[in-house]
Image (cartoon, rainbow, N blue to C red; front, top):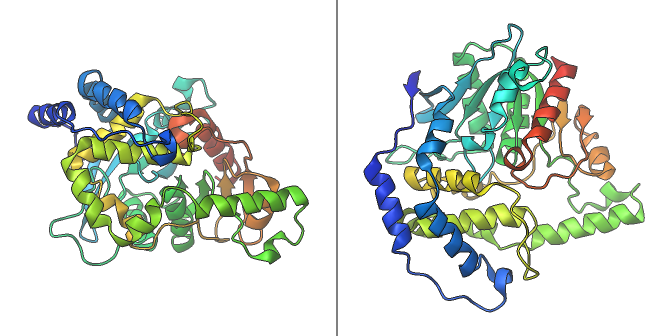
Length: 378
């Protein structure tokens, strides 16, 4: 284990600002948001990134959490490790989403580790471990890159080893999006040590199998059809990343505006793409969006983070019944009924999240969901 402190050289920040100011802007196509991120929106955001956004302030926020690196299976793994002052705290590993970073948990780590200081019951507290997924942010792939494919299973094995090295024999796991794929996989392979698997959502999503809807009412059938159409649509980023991630990587590495446009589109598309009907309100504070974009730019991991698609890892969480499962934003009753066929569901929140990046947009809902679930299984 090596201590890690984020300290970006000033010339790198100066270069970022200069590149932003020298951007060669695309012309606006007809159709507004229906054809992608608009020039007007991105120009304003990029101008703020260049001349208003304070990276040093965000760097200090991130560095308030003790961080470390270690090498597992040939991969440098970066992680924050924040011990709770409470004597009976439960170890908890948090896995972030794609395309995100460990900065996703900036607003939840404090209340989870030190509930007393945040006006919460100290009887439920956590020692938090928040790693950067391999190929993301401060866990960049080695050069030359490891030819062995990364997969959700390989990440789960890596996380199990990380928790073992930290001396945690019993621990919980939480994840969102990509993290929601890793978390139940970790529970399945390390069930002797994982006490509970908590995710934000993804379980029980209809797959199109008619048998799933045998007891569904008309409204639920319509909802399942809508979900199918939604997964079939979108911007098409999934199939492209699954086939040609290297091509996009050149743009990510050379143009911060290209990287920003791509991340903004993912954040907005997941939260209800406007589709030409006008821009939706920002569900995530722009300083958090830009903190994430700056991490991607400075670490050069825009391309390598796409392994979740290229390696066929993207999809829905696996079913597992070895340890209890909790879902904080699980959705309607149909989803829960389907999830309960193959999972031991002990808590289920059906509230709608304002963002796919739940911990950034609605941190209190994630904090509450984690605390309520682990109060039942600890």
